[in-house]
Image (cartoon, rainbow, N blue to C red; front, top):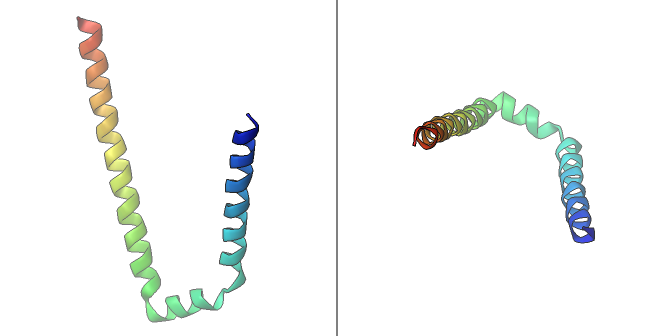
Length: 73
């Protein structure tokens, strides 16, 4: 139990430090926006999210089908 708490604390510390570094330098966002690169980043993020949701939906359908087959037997 103590190891789990230590692990969770370490993960949260890393996440907080990443957020702090991300908010430190805001001039890069303006530079990306002015060059039009922010749209490329957003397109990649949206593509990844759509892929993940499609994968989750397909897994849900497979599990539902397996559950129905198991209950019929």
